[in-house]
Image (cartoon, rainbow, N blue to C red; front, side):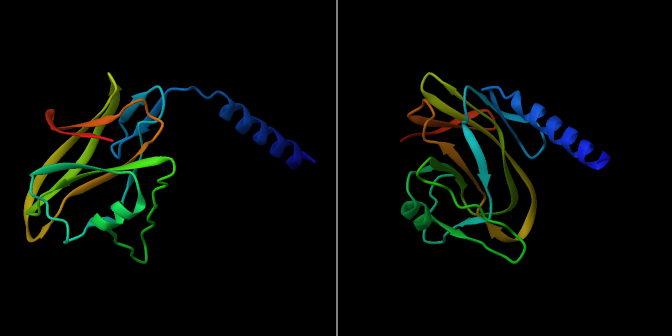
Length: 170
C-alpha cells in the first residue's frame, strides 16, 4: 500500500512538471548552450552518421545545401552505419534537411552550431568552424540538421564564424 501511494505521488509529480510547457523553443548545442530561440522550432535536430558522397564535387570553401526530398538528399549523402551508432533518418514530410559542407581538408575541422533564428522571413544559421591539427588523411567536414517546413521563412542565410556566407531559398 505504501509503495502504491509513493508510485502515485511520483506519477503526479511527473504529470505536474510536464504540464507547464511554453511556446518558446530552445535547442541545446553539444556544449549545453542555447542554440535556438524562436517562436517555434527552427533547427529541430542535428543529423549524425552521414557522409558526403565522393560523387558530389564541393567547389566552394563552404556551401549551404537545402534538401526537400529524400531522393536528392541520398544523391549527395551516404549513411555511415556502424555497430554502435544510431542514425536518425529525416522526415521529409515535415522537415527540410540543411547541410553545411566544406572542401576536403587534411586539417581536423569541426563545425558547431552557435545559434539559429528567424528574422524578416530569413532563417539565419550561425556556425563556428574550428581547425585543429593536420591529419594523415583528408576528410570532408559537414554539419547536417533538420528545419521544420512550417517555419515562417523562405530562405536560409549561413554565417560562418560571424561572416555572412551562403543564402539559399526554398
